[in-house]
Amino acid sequence: MFNKFIQILENKFVPLASKLGSQRHLLSIRDGFISIMPLAIIGSLAILINNFPIVYYQEYMSSLFGTEWTLFSDYIYNGTFAIMSLLIVFSISYNLADSYNEDPLLAALISFSSFIITIIQTDAQGFSIPFQWLDASGLLVAIVVAILATEIYVKTMNLISSKKKQEKGTMTPILNRYFSALIPTIFIFLIFSLMRLVFAQFGIENIIEEIYRLIQLPLMGLANNLLTALVIVFIGHFFWFLGLHGTNILEPVIQALYLPALQENIQAVSNNLAVPNIFTKPFFDSFVYMGGSGTTLSLLIVIYLFSNSKRKRDLMKLSSTQSIFNINEPILYGLPIVMNPIYFIPFILTPLILTLTSYLAILTGFVPKTIAMVPWGTPPIISGFLITGSISGSLLQVFNIFIGILIYFPFVKIAERIKE
Image (cartoon, rainbow, N blue to C red; front, side):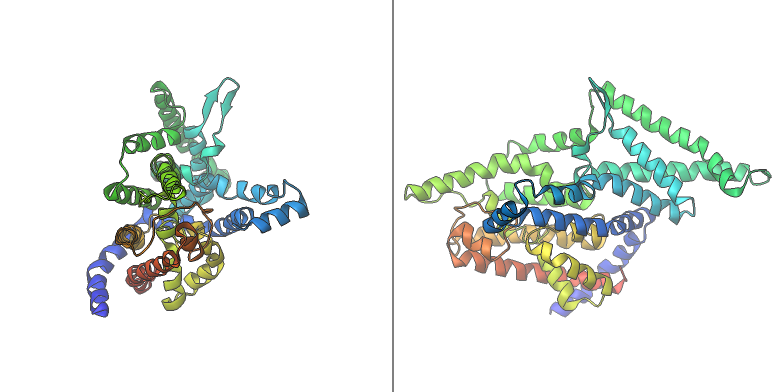
């Protein structure tokens, strides 16, 4: 029955996935994320070193290296994840220009400068770059700028090349090429500078922050119920798929809704009263986002057990340690999942299904309601026990991981069939 389902899914889904997967822009985005995979892996290790969720480890490191021991990994983080948007605008533009057989380095440099023009801010001290928004938060803007700037560059270069086809220059080919790029570069910078002026006229000093504000505003008045939980899970993962940092976008909403709910549960336990709330922040962190957003721990297990792709298995080996501690950026950007049509369905469907299974498990009394907060990096099985005070919390995590494996399995097979 399961094999028949996979066959039907392959027959219906493979042609569409193959068509989308070979689309020039999506392919450039995918290759752009794969290009920065080594940096993502190193950056995730730096995060793990600083946030390893064991108190004795933290105390030992402080006694050994001093209270500022985390600066070592912070520097690595600042050179990798903290500038993710800068890296990706360069990488995507390079791959897209290369697919057109245009100069990829020049296109990437132009896109990089265009992105700076787009996000630069003015303040009392002059111009400044909002570095706090250059991590995964700025990925969507980076992707749009990279594609737009590169497309304009390619089209204008083609126009210039067709007009100069019969001309004979006295300069070397490389000098001729870069002098020919002056007009496209000026044109591109003019467009992005005018866009930046338009933003300023509407009072928008930071386009990335404005996007976040517009998304968060309608969500702030939501109630704490099943429908809201499903909406928040869906929106967060949809943004992740687009390249936006779904976790950061929804953090104010999650803090406003689910931290007070946890506090009510803790107070109820302290007063020997019935625990009122099912949905709390630890509910999502421990029962839904195992291995990180998308429950990618299940995906890693599928790759480890069933994948024939050496690249994916190597990625799994490099990412498995971080994934156990709920750090999954190497998978999101290295597989990649971001902007990859093959993984769109399981990446969004898995956390939605696990939200439902976890809700039903707690509603029926099989698992107690959450009554404690644990560090976000606490591994599954351990975290399930700690947040509920019961082994049934750990059993629910095992069950959810298994459900995730069933959902991801056919899509991993489809990806291998089309050699993704």
